[in-house]
Image (cartoon, rainbow over all chains, first blue to last red; front, side):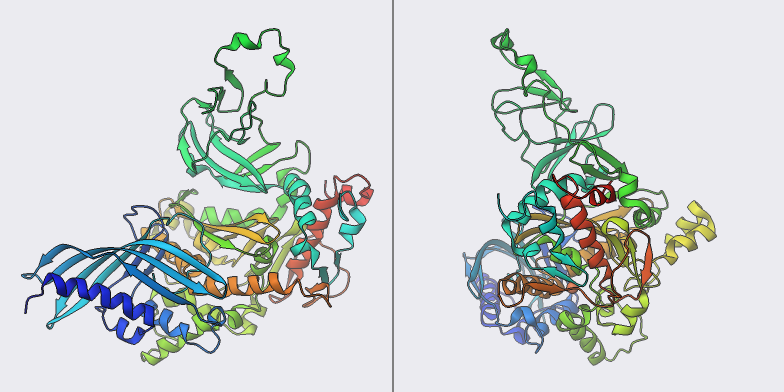
Length: 159
Length: 451
Ligand SMILES: [Fe+2]
């Protein structure tokens, strides 16, 4: 099977919708087992390992993160946060049906709210997608926050 | 002038044995007095000298509410200057780091200053002829803080010209810095990247107190650490299976009360203290290939054993930083208002040690101390609830009475049960003394104690 540009673009829209609707089981299932969700701390950061990042999480940590959201004693989620992604049309940077690897970059606005607080973050998300058994999966995801070096309060859901 | 200004007795009355008055966390006047007295008369952390490795390198930060520049002068020494042009008050540097070459140049009227602050040149200088400029407050240039000390790379400053010496202020507590630095085979640390910057809508002292609060991890962090342990079990692993680094870091937060009781708390005079005297949540990290060899080569087996046997958990350096020796982290609790604190979490590389150690340190920092951290979320939730809750009238007092034996003497080093709140009481003992020592009317005893 070979994917089309629309398949790649739809994938990114669908993923954002899963996060906004809190469909985390489905969302985790998008990931390849050795994938990492990376959110750099520094502008144009190149190294995820030897300097601090906001997030650099494997599937174990992502699973822990989403399971925690529903825990009986998850105090920072009583009441729960809500989030909302608004996407620019994703740009397909690489579409390589021979290798089954694709790269899509998307500008987004992300809103997260809880109680009387609401914050807006401007994001650039880069999806490394891989086609495995006829299905698109996330091989890696990098989310750069425009003001990544600013001081933030809690960011509790997934931008 | 309010209730507390120049009123040492009113300030002393806020702290009584096992209780402290809520005003210390929420009162605007006390916050301003903290900036004027406490943060001026104590030794406050500024930065690490590896942030400014070359001459002319500078780093901007603040000491209490005072904007300062840390800069490497032409003689290679670190200077700490108030970040203000003596002319109109313009901040000389506003980027967080940079290199200014041989001199600072104010962007407003091009007055220039040597990197020790001395006035170098003013354009159209003849305009100041016969004006008495030499006697003006502008003539000395950018002012330096009262005193600076570079202790094994960590730069501290005292704003006040006169006061307690660095050695007398920190005394035995410097062993925690020694242990952190000695963990490098080269005996040197280097800063690794920018810090996390996490904004807290709460008083800075809540964060400092939390560093030795050993009765909260298994409660407040059950949702993260407890869930991690549970997922681990569901994956078919047991307690004894080797853990991935993430599990090594997070699982010990769920240790039972006895673990924290047994780990011990040590206090030193002037508000310093640490958890993890005998062991800590950092004790069981797995060995990293190549590190032991490098340490043995540098120190020999016996000294290496001595260095690595210490696994101090959190060391509080009063007033507002904490370090973790075993993972080379420093957290700076920067007060921005009675109900606003910026937390910067820095990490350091052990020079000549394998990169895997730094990778673990970076992982710890993002997992536990980031605005995106599932552990940090619950801590911040507790602080902010307390900051709001303290406005409830009906009880003016906060309780710090756990294992309180009656009137305490903080003037000598002491080791206690790891769940005592003695270290919090130790901080408040120092808080009263350094708040009041330079107030008119302070008792002779208070002045003496702070000297
Ligand atoms: Fe905590």
